[in-house]
Image 1 (spheres, helix red, strand yellow):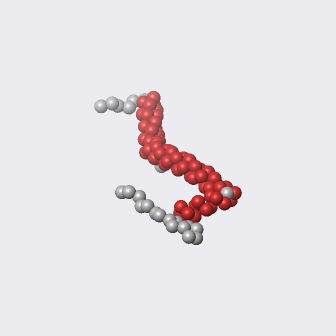
Image 2: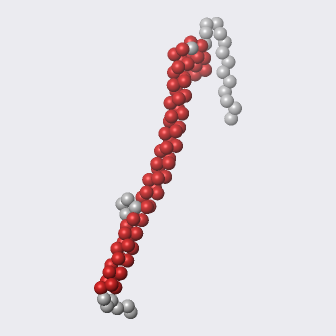
Image 3: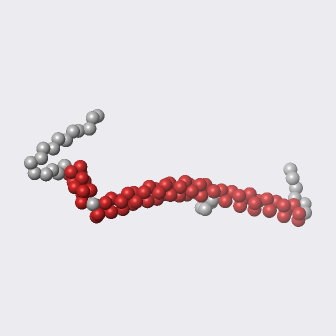
Length: 98
């Protein structure tokens, strides 16, 4: 068994205990490495979601611009989405194949 004889040994043991404790708490603590890794993964997912939302916003802005400046686009949208038709017009709607 190792006996502690002088002050150097006390300092050495206390220093190592402090460093080991610091390392353990930096890994599993409230703001430790494990928590940081999960937060990093969540941040990456949020950045991807932001990119997708920015693309959707651009597409919506283009659609709004087209609807605002082109009457033909409104006409096409009404025919495609709401199956609207003009007077004396026969419209055939084909279902999608399974």
